Amino acid sequence: MINIKSVSKIFKTKKQNITAVDQVDLSINHGEIFGIIGYSGAGKSTLIRLLNGLEDVTEGDVIVSGDDISKMSKGDLRNKRQKVSMIFQHFNLLWSRTVAENISFPMEIAGVPKKERQARVDELIKLVGLEGRAHTYPSELSGGQKQRVGIARALSNKPEVLLCDEATSALDPETTDEVLDLLVDITKEMNLTIVLITHEMHVIRKICDRAAVMENGKVVEVGSVIELFQNPQSSVTKRFVKDDISDDDHQLAIEELKASFPTSTIVKLNFVGTRAKSPIVSEVIRNYDLDVNILSGNIKQTNQESFGHLYIALDIDNETLESISNEFKKHDVTLEVEAG
Amino acid sequence: MNSVIEEFKNMFSFENVKWDAVIEATYETIYMTVIATIAAFIIGLIFGIILFLSNKSENVPSKPLYGTTSFIVNLFRAIPFIILIILLMPFTKAIMGTVMGSNGALPALIIGAAPFYARLVEIGLKEIDKGVIESAESMGANTWTIIWKVLIPESLPALISGITVTSIMLVGSTAIAGVIGAGGLGNLAYMVGFTRNQPDVTLVATVVILIIVFVIQILGDFFSKRVDKR
Image (cartoon, rainbow over all chains, first blue to last red; front, side, top):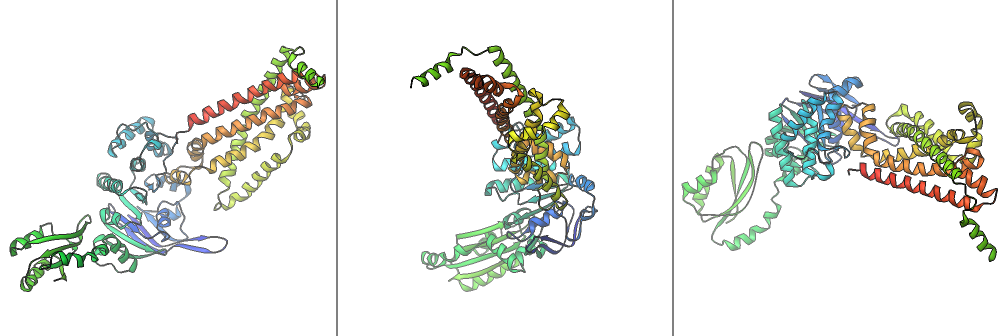
C-alpha cells in the first residue's frame, strides 16, 4: 500500500544542513493502522508530510498505492491528495466556516456538485456523532468535537489513506480515547489505511497493528505492537514501553505492604502479551483453594493482548508457590516473589 | 482678549456659510473617498497577496518578485502625499484628461493609499494560522483556491479594519488635494474659509469631515466584528 524506500529529507539552511529523515525504509500494508512513535524532533512530522508531498523528499521514493509521490507533477499530486487526507494536532479548521462548510471544503476543491456535497456532509456528521452541530462555528466546539470535524473533513473525498499528525496530542485522555475509538471504527467501515504519528505509547498500544520507532531521523525499530511491547530492542522503545506500563510508584509500597500482611507472601504476576481470554488468576486460585488479597495492579490492553502486572498477597507454602508458578507460566504469566 | 472673543463670534456666526457649497463639497469629498477606497482595496489586496505569497522563504524563484513588489510599495509609501500629487500631474493629465477637480485627484489618492493598504493586507494575511493553509494544501487546493477560500475569508476582519483605516486616511488626503484644486471640503476650508477669512466656513467643513470619519469608523467596526466568528 505504502512503500517508503531509502528516503531522506535534508533541510538546507544558511548555517547548516539538518537531516530530518535519514535513510528510512518502511512498508505499510493496506487496511492496517500503522503508528510512528518518537520524541519531538525525531523526524516523524517530516516523515508523515513526505507521504502526501507537503514536503519533498531529498532522496529516495515514496510510493502510495502505486504512485510515486516524489515524482508526480503538481497537478497530479493535488489530485492524489484528495485520496491521501490528513488530520492535525491543532485541527486546522477554518474559523470562518461552519462545521458543515468545513466538512464540505475538500469536496469543493475536488469539484463535487453541491447536492452531493450536502448529502455527504449529512452522512459524515452522523458518522462522527456531531448531529445538530452542522451550523455552529468551530469556536463554539470543544477540542474533541473539533477533531471530529477534522476527521469528517478528511473523510469527505473517501480517501484510501488517512494521515494523523499527532491527532490526539492536544486532547485530554478521555477525549483521546473517544477519538481513537472513532478512528478504529472508520478504518473498518471505510476500508482505510491509517498512518499516525504520536509521542504517546498508549495511542500506539490502543489502536495500532504495527508501529515504527523513530530517533534522530532514523527508524530504529519496526514491528507488530505486540512484539514491541514483549521484546523491545532499542533503548528508545524500551523507554516508551516502560513509561506506558510504569511500575515505579509501586516499588516503594512493598515494604509497607509487607508490614500490613506479615504472614503473607507478596507476589508479582507479570502479564507480558498474554493472549488468553480465560480468567487465569481466578482459575488458579480456585484450583489451589487460596485466599488472595489484591494489592495493586496495572494491566493494559492492546487491541489484542494484555500487558502489565498484578501484586497479590497470598498465605502460601513454598511447594504450592512453585506449582502455581508453573501453572501461571503455562499461560504466559510469570511470577516473582517480592517479599515472603 | 476682545479680539479672541470677536474671532469666536465670527466662527460661530455661520453668516458666510453657503449651504449649497457645503453640500457640493461634501459630495465631492465622499465621491473621492469612496472611489479611491474601492480602487485602493482592489489594488492593495492584489499587491498584499503577492507580497504574502512571494515571501515564503523556501520558494526561491519568488524572491525577486517579493523584492520588486516590496520596493514599489515602499517607494510610493515614502513619498509625501502633497509631492506625490505634483509628481503625478503629467500622468494624471494623460489618463484623466485633467489635473483639476475630483477626478484629477483620484490617481494620486489611489497610488498613495494602495501601497499602504497592501502592507496592511500582508500583515493581516500573516496572522492566519499556518496550519490552516497547510491543511488546505493537504486537501489538494491550488493557489487560487487557497487565496479565495482560505486567505481572504480567514483574514476578513483584518482586511476590513485595514480598509477602514485606509479610508479614513483617504479623507485626510482628499482635504490636502483640495488645497491644490481638487474640490471637496478641504478646498472649501482653504479657498473660502482661509483665503476669504471666513472661519465659520472652515468650522463647518471640519465638522462635516469629522462626521464622515466617524461614520466610516463605525461602519468598519461593525462589519469587522460581524464577520469575525473566532
